[in-house]
Length: 333
Image: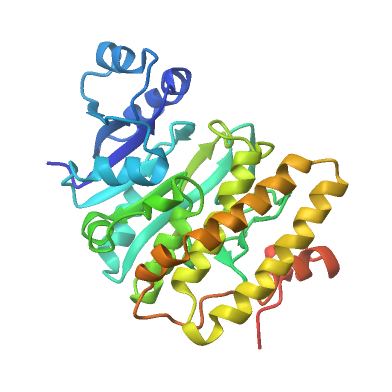
């Protein structure tokens, strides 16, 4: 058995598999490769069976989304390490070796993300992950190399180091850790479940790490682009879910109240920008959060660390102080 399994979650992604699976197969000889299929209705399976006989197929009974799809698939995976890889990713030669080296060198590291560059503009970081993720006090995510819509050029300015969250576009995790933490929260369906997972790991003193020596190219938005109100709904709802589950109890009410106010301002801004469907998506996200408080309370961690955030308010830093690059962001005193 190989030490690492690469698992691609597929839903009617024939064109993406045709384009990107060849690079995964060519440059991943150290790994077993699996396609976990969310009940596709296209010809994905026949394409894989006819062209990649060494790729294993895991058939799921429904479209479970990212979170439950991977939870179900990993029940059948026994390799020591797992890479959850989007189907719109081109990998590079020797991308796995430095990842395995980090896992072997430090047992406290449970999750790793490679450098994620933009497939369509390969000198620049890609939105979903860049050089590793952090959050502010109110749960707003940002990355080294990407803050809101400002994308930096990759000039090797970000070296390997501990980060707060790793991108779900390419998410390496110890198999035992994934199962110990009961996988992703299936109530999320898709978006930010990887941040919630990393936060839960952080509360257990398990580190997430960025590996600058491993590079992939990600298309981004191939399954659900940024202009889709459904993505707005999932991001805002799931962020509230994540905060309620992981914030220290003595800070939970005040931080979430301020976050609700910030979300209200975001909704107004979208409405003024003639995006009423996105404003409605934010309102809908808040009602979904309120109706799920009872279920979320059952999932709250017994251990909640207070030093989870990199900066107090990334919204203020970016929009008011005009600090667009990660190196300019103020850390709390």
